[in-house]
Length: 113
Image (cartoon, rainbow, N blue to C red; front, side, top):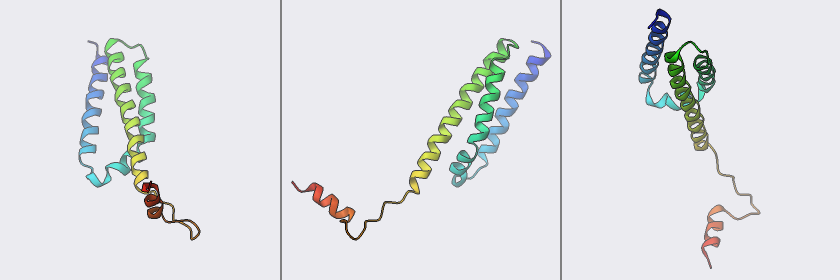
């Protein structure tokens, strides 16, 4: 193993450790806004991991790059799913107008044969 490969492995392990510590110290109340706010950063890390995977610097570099691509992809997709769920929580039901019937009346009418 040459020095460059060893340094790449060191940076990869250190980045994973620091990322874990940063996320572990975030209060649970802030996880959803944090996920939605960092989707752009995750997209940048996905591009960087694609470059690392395809840079042809050796087998270990390609393997670590592939792991980084998979991790970043899961992070981006999960971030969008969580953001979508969070936004659904804040949607309001449409208010019935005076001319139309209330949602409770519509449900009761739908249950009648």
